Length: 373
Image 1 (cartoon, one colour):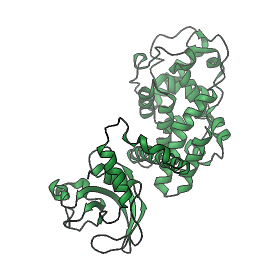
Image 2 (cartoon, helix red, strand yellow):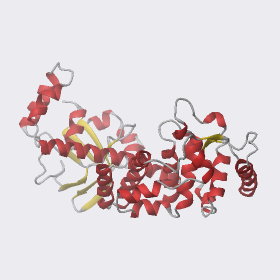
Image 3 (tube, rainbow, N blue to C red):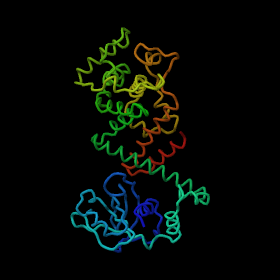
Image 4 (cartoon, rainbow, N blue to C red):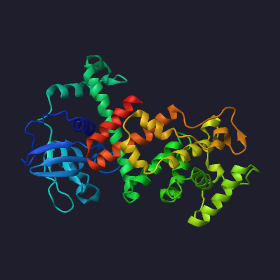
């Protein structure tokens, strides 16, 4: 018996749940299993369950034997103070938190069907590269679909948990949190880090004061990104942009730390250059007030596409860098890039808000969006 197998049983609830109770005899009902924790600490986070007549939210720890809790010194570790359920194969000993309170224990030994144990033992003995492959043809299609959907939901919950951590750092400001995720999204694979830095060094509170002016939003973004610190070409637009940023930088006491060398231009088409992505980001920011609210309220895939596919300023429709003209006019972000942003910005935000509010409708909306992209 291994803890990985017990984690699997817990995560997918593959055990008898009729008249479920703890080792102490208290009635138990699982409302949410939580999501697997890949870092140090309890095995599952943000679980919800009823123990007796009390609803609990917290962590779940998995062990072979309940006594492993003490063997691992969890009773002295503050990370385990939030454990609301100890899931074990054998409940051989009561366990306690640091404050002396008893941790509810669920023993699985008598609740797992023999055929599941038999399959597990077969897999353990197999020498095949993918031991479970032999069972795949016998799995009903409806089960395969359910497994994929469950994996998708789990992944969304993990992404949502990361966003909730950022939300806490931002003082529960959803708009700033959405803004940071949006900026990171516009970095796509290559420039995520500098875009994320830009969002933190140029707060939404500053951008918001100038959202009615696309030109001023561009000045803030290009200036804070370090593209206006160099000697500017003699064209009217970049000269005005540099002058405007000089004024705004002094007004808000901005300190550009990003420089040209922080941005990656190598091995990418000009349409994907960060200079173009900044123009597209500026168009989205100046085109929408209360951006997070729009992420929540958009009704269908077309509404999300429209949200991201805003037309850039005239200069950037014809240029990919300062003084470097496009061979063709590019009005704004393409549909495939918009779908990428839906997947990596809108969907995770919906999943995070679902966890935050405990309203499953937002998670269902996120899953429905993914199915249509």
